[in-house]
Length: 239
Image (cartoon, rainbow, N blue to C red; front, side, top):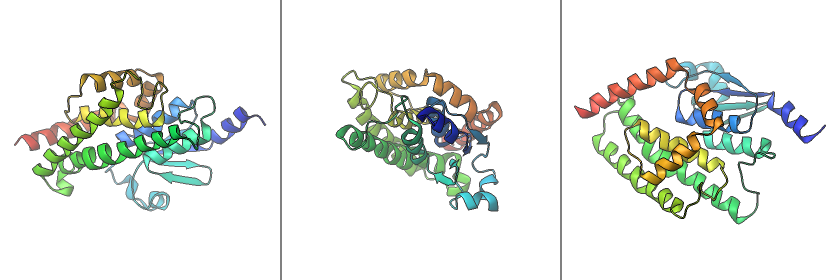
């Protein structure tokens, strides 16, 4: 069996649980960039769907996204994206070759985006903004999260200042999927991006894979609910 035939056979076993968040979007985008066929189980966050006994057997943390590939069950959006790129990359390389400095730098950017921008900035805004009824209102935490996002996003901006198209050079990689999804998330929360970061975001969001992933991850009804939630949260914050 050829490499392409093996990849096609493996891809036929792919199932993604989750839509409607920036984190699920990363998985859909990676799959679209790799031109893989997959099944979507359109579970949403905070709907109770991820608290069912059957889903908790897949991911005891009760979070989306989750990838099923044959017997493998994998959670965490960055881990899923990296696995897909490693396993199905082929000529659509979304990762540098393993073992070298380029791969190490790529992983550095992945960890940076997931910790400094996602977990300690944007998710704090979600927890104490959109989800304040669950986690409590914390205006000081919101202010600190926004300041941290701006400070850390400036690091990415400085890296792009040499004219490179993407974080690690001119090739579009998984770290660019992660960063672009965070920039989208920040704009959704009212952040104004610098001109270089906005140009970078627009460049990547013009890709066919992005458009297809957006359609898969943000159906119209889901997107409408997210916007209503954001407007309600903004009203609470302003008061």
